[in-house]
Amino acid sequence: MCGIVGYIGERSCAEILLDGLSKLEYRGYDSAGISVLTEEGIRTVKRRGRLQNLRGAVETAKLTGNCGIGHTRWATHGEPSDRNSHPHGTGRLSLVHNGIIENYLGIREMLERRGYVFESETDTEAAAKLIDFCYKGDPLAALREALPVLRGSYAFSVIFADYPGKIFAVRRDSPLIVGLSEEGNFTASDIPAILRYTRRYLLLDTDEIAVVERERVTVFDVAGNRVEKEVKTADFDMGAAEKGGYPHFMLKEIHEQPKALRDTIQPRLEDGLPRFSELPDDFFDGITKIYIVACGTAMHAGLVGRCAIERYAGIPVEVDLASEFRYREPLLDPEHHLFVCITQSGETADSLAALRLAKARGVRTLSVVNVLGSTISRESDQVLYTYAGPEIAVASTKAYSVQLAVMYLLALRLALLRKGISEEEVRRLTAELCRMPEVVEQVLAREDEIHHIAAACQNAHDLFFIGRGLDYALSQEGSLKLKEISYIHSEAYAAGELKHGTISLVTDGVPVFALATQDALYEKMIGNIKEVKARGAQVVLLHREKAADVGKIADLSFALPQMEELFCPIPGVTVLQLFAYYCSLLRGCDVDKPRNLAKSVTVE
Image (cartoon, rainbow, N blue to C red; front, top):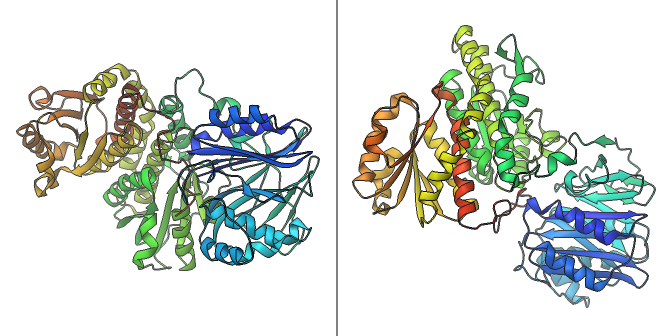
């Protein structure tokens, strides 16, 4: 969730650190700070709020030095404030941290008994002072002594006043990379932080410690043995992480969905049929049940996947929130069950914990991931990459669409293997799936219509989404998008459940966004719409072309192009994403960086 950047090299580091932090704003944050090794020792400046607050303070402080670390904080322990901002440390060292230290209170109490005074409420300060307590002049020895004491997840970048030419970096579960360039080297949470300077990097594994110097990087395991690391090259350039003329990253990424869909679908086709060349032919043999586990938007993609897999492959599917999965003691059969994890970042802490539980129980694991080389992709038995490219806006858009595409491909591949439907029918459905990028482009061409609908709803205090079947699954994603970026209170309900309490909340003028794209359920949806209309609701209807009586039942409507109803969630979510975007824009919200949210949730 938090963002880390460090630099040591030939150039003054303060501006490089600030630039790197600006590229990590998409991860979500409420404060920021930097520490620089100067001739007077370690100097730290940190401020609550946006980066411009920190930038002004750094300019006033006139920090000079070629080695430093920076951080954007998303508050977990302690309110957003200057004193709780990172970096934390002592006169001898300074540390930035992504993750969570679970036993920080015990560490803090032990150190207070030994005379340490704490200035913040954070778990991070306990880690910094523990390393200081262990420090006897050798940073590596101090880290090796301190790390076994720490419980939880972390990525650290640390500088020591006695070692002005080095940054020490270590990780456990939380992501951390080391960037390599001719003008110096970097540490960072993510590629965009360093992309302006280099595309070459090392990926640290759990419990590895990197000593980052101006001209070299040395990596050790926790026992002190040297580790040889493969130099990787980022597969996207700086342009992919810039707005490209759009006013917001979110709008840019919505418009990138047709390309992302083509990039994800086309490599998985062979003779007009779905085929995963990444997976061994026998990977799905003997599977009688599938668990799809994810968080937030990715979980909503799993709900659509469940509908498609059960309908066409005939395999029972359970969809679980990763944060709940391991605490309900799931009944896992290592011979016949498949665990599928869906995640954009590949670093989500709850999803990673669920994956490790499944692996510990001997279950086959398959992950659908967007970020190459991420922790979940490396720890899964098999991985299917989505090709959305970097997604910078906190609210996920194109990552969800390509997750849907993979879920559909998986359903059709399983249907083919199990002969749930004929090869001819699989071929027909696959061809229709290939048409979805074009259908999304048709929806994008009608953006003004969606803007008009958003204008009619922008002042709502409450808004409800209703749907049945696939539409209910999609309505949950639409509701999440709206609430996370516009701050309109929004809930999604199965339309058949309205009479079981929810309809008491529908009063004059309350917007109800009804999704009705499934032919077999359309008449039932009309009944539900009439129920809310009778109580004064303002109804917005999402339907397919040729739907009956639209003008009689809805105040506002948007017609999807005529298409196979199975795939309506793909262009349908584009409508809901644009609706949320324009509601947020019209309400004056920060579209790309909504309050209190983080892009990559690396704490449980």
